[in-house]
Image (tube, rainbow, N blue to C red):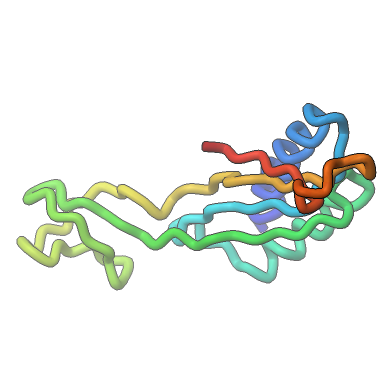
Length: 131
């Protein structure tokens, strides 16, 4: 189950962000996950729930956006989204291709709970973005 190792790395980074902002509790963790990662959603969610216990993320939620597989033909440079594990170019039928998108696991952003004295217009959360 590689999901647990991946989640531990993600959670470690989210907790570093929380600690850098005064040890505020983590409200939510948002990821971009490439389809090529072969993540089993149920195992990923279960791993997150197990790893967050007794941390600043104990009550946090996990959401992610799936990033579809996109490759570029090494021969004619056509970009395409393969429909199977066989990467045949739709233009020239070559099976030589380079992965362009779909292998990432990116911590997109973390939402932290604001302290009780926060200004009302913050809507109760601070957002850290990786971009």
